[in-house]
Length: 186
Image (cartoon, rainbow, N blue to C red):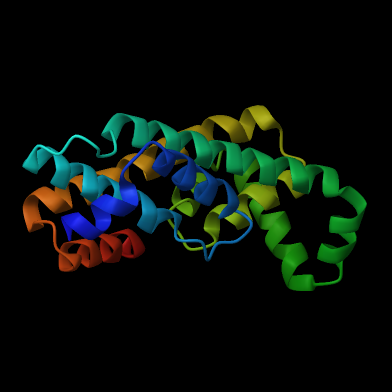
């Protein structure tokens, strides 16, 4: 596995690919951003175990993933905030979306920062919360700290899954599958 993953993660461009995937997955939740982070961390662990030099740096991977997560959240937040009337009309057409937006707004207003953090781990949850917070015109100072915490927690969790999974389970495709399964389980 080291040879195939190592060739994909060799070089500094892996950070840009990971960051771009994370930035865009707020709008396209089907992008494999979590899988890319785990694979890069697995390659880093395998490379450090074998003494390879051209492997991703764990700290740089963690920082790029967390930063891209927060930036993606803020882009979605601002798009929804500025979507204004058009987005409000689209939401108003559906009773379920209107109710969901009201509940999300209420939860965030009551200090529902844990919702922002938990949503980062749920499929498409990040999109719903970021867009919902912007559409509900929640203050950025109420949303941003929780987005930062969510981005750091998610990035640390994903990097740790790949890195420690490779150390404990070895550098096989089965180990990567177990790590990705744990990410989806969370």
